[in-house]
Length: 166
Image (cartoon, rainbow, N blue to C red; front, top):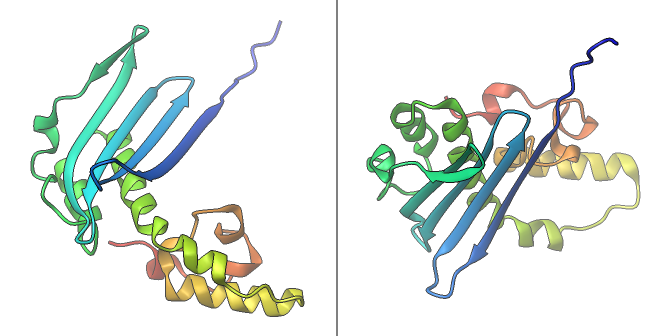
């Protein structure tokens, strides 16, 4: 029988307010190779990172990654430059991706109400122009959902250098 490569991936990110007023951003990833949870706690309104937890499932048991790996990130603000800090301080590409996703989710949690309050143009071309302008004004929306992903008509004219922090 032929062996067919099978791959599946589940990834979700959620942001919620804790009882003590912090924002908890949790990113979960499970695929054929990894099962990882990253949890990032921030303090509004400055969005200062208070705590980072990363857990990886190894041999059916959750193991915590030492917070020593993230001590230079704790105390930083989620804002301009945070992705550079994460890139320079976190060696493991998977952990880096997870922490970046947590940060993006916190940022986007403040955009949610804008999206809910946005007008709903009836004409498709009008709607595409409206939402394309919204993505241009807040490039962090780029790639965050199917409508704003590469290949979508909405983001057709937006270049990568406008979107990703170098």
